[in-house]
Image 1 (cartoon, helix red, strand yellow):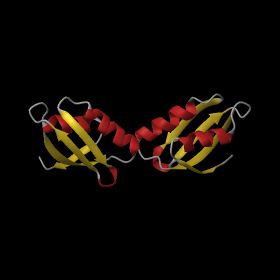
Image 2 (cartoon, each protein chain N blue to C red; image 1 turned 120 degrees about the vertical axis):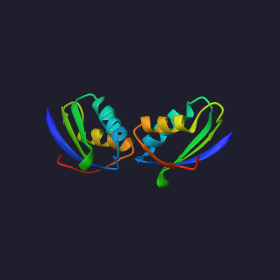
Image 3 (cartoon, rainbow over the protein chains, first blue to last red; image 1 turned 90 degrees about the vertical axis):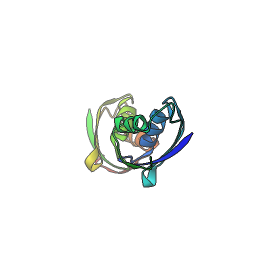
Length: 72
Length: 72
């Protein structure tokens, strides 16, 4: 498992939290995902042999948000 | 039918629009509901003999938003 912290803009409410956590959490290889709404952070614990960080970023962007940076 | 304009705070994104339009729109006696996100306005066309303005307000508040004023 690997942990990454993504900075994401556009998440504004608990519906957004549910959209991101729900969609990223369904990806194969993602063990856990947590959104911290007040600072726009998404914490992801994932298996890099099963899912790429780019796939995770694309999933978030497909929900309508912008990934502005990551530590991976 | 009667039209009312409610001012609602806390709606921040299209998920919020869908939550309010979906829940209010399902009330018996509500003919149409439209959320204008950028100014926090909810326009409701309803039959006051079937549904009260208070029921409409409560439905919006049950979704987690505050109705701060109405013209009814």
